[in-house]
Image (cartoon, rainbow, N blue to C red; front, side, top):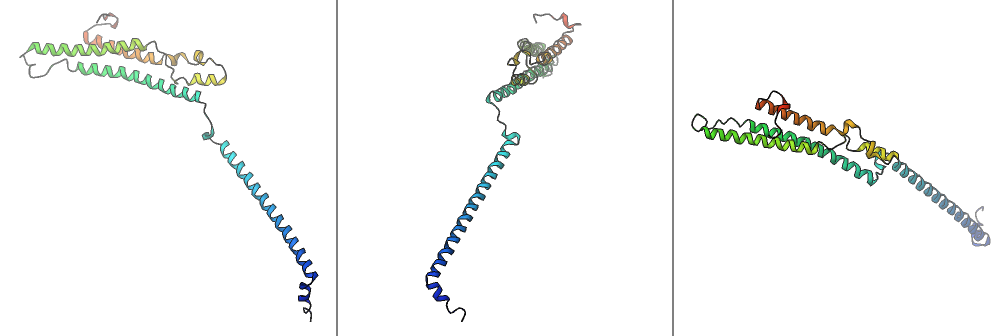
Amino acid sequence: MLFDGIPSFWEGAGGAFFLQKLYSICWAKRNDWREQEENSQGLKNQWQMKLAQLRKAVGEGTREVSWIWKEGRWWGEEVQLVAEEMCWCLVMLGFNAKEWEGQMEYTGVLAVDKDMAHVEGACAYALSQVQLYRNIATGFHLVWKSLKVPKDGGRNNEKEDKDGDGDGDKDGVAKGDEAEIGDELDRALEDEEEHDADVEGWDNVDNIPENL
């Protein structure tokens, strides 16, 4: 029959040679597959690395701010906060003065023609408190008037230093921004002086004595 000689073929030298040849072919193919797999893994790793680099290169979160500029921005914000606290301090002093003004007219149980000395003493004490708060506000105004606080908290100086000028503290702040806090303090003091003129009966603010 056709397949009667096949067992004898595999048992002989021809079968051994054929098996060895088949094994060498399979081994070569296996090496080719492994090499292709390693190449594909390498390409995948390269693609992932490029993708990670692109992700890092895009977006505001990847920008590194130098500690010098970060500290400058932080102190600029602190300057703005101090300027606001200065303005609110004057406002609070004016509010306290007006509160004591409301207590200058004593309306207690001794106010109805019973103890005029007590009424006059309460009015004098309230008036002294009003003058105390206004003197404090005037003193703060004189101290803070010479301060020059930029409106942007010094960020103009920071930008000019980045451009390479190196002397942003000299010309980086506009005159209007420098005098903003001083103008607000001036307005607060003028309001207080006008109110003093109305209370004391003076016709002109310039006529108010300086030794009050």
